[in-house]
Image 1 (cartoon, helix red, strand yellow):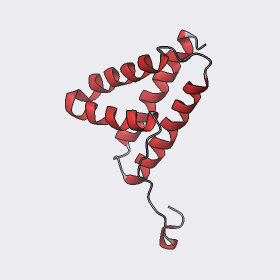
Image 2: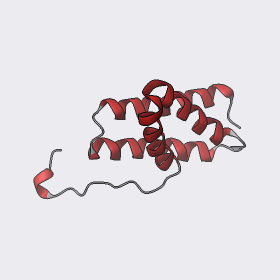
Image 3: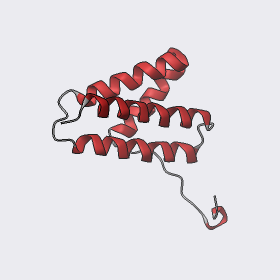
Image 4: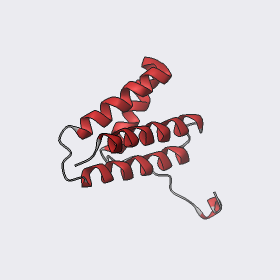
Length: 103
């Protein structure tokens, strides 16, 4: 079972990833990176022995923080992207062509 501190650190990590994503210009590449990082966090949370209420607490807390930082329009859109990634839903990943090497 996760401790309160672990849950709070997970919330802070998720918010940090989303803030970095927002500040990176929300490109296709940054979206893929954000989604991978958030999916990883979501996977770790699901590995905790008891996630009873923990997932909801994390999701709700991240949503509240994003809305507090970015307002109801952008905050809600960012929360939607966070939620899809956290739940492991498919997020488009750019196809790299040979001309994109080193990107």
